[in-house]
Length: 194
Image (cartoon, rainbow, N blue to C red; front, top):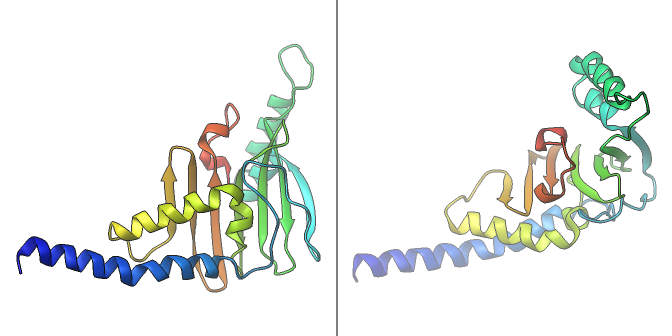
């Protein structure tokens, strides 16, 4: 057997071995109660047993990083008043849903009512097929491509021009972010999605 045939056989065996992994990963990601959300769509319908609160962009940043709360408050006050003295609308709001499991899902909602980013953290992984909606197949395909390229272990990271997802953690401590780069409002960066 030639060296190239040996490599091809090895790649086929490895791909066959890890193909079920992608399917089991998709199933594992879906073990938490459904949040019924969709990235790129309207905010979620509140699931049974969940609580919801809506935060301004500045309040969400302060909640994500309490050490910067005074700076975030000043920035919110400064951006709320334009040079003409009128109140300007914030570029987005954050709808924070605490699921019955204790997992917190934060939806970043544009002024038009569309979810452009989602972040989650908690003891249970939320159902990513619900959170990512029509982008879930693209996420799974991205994970499968990473695995085929040799990234067998590690967090579920997919970085593509139209979709970015960072998902990771371990039993009892899961977190992640997903966003649509093309849909980020002016002045909003990926770092704002926490």
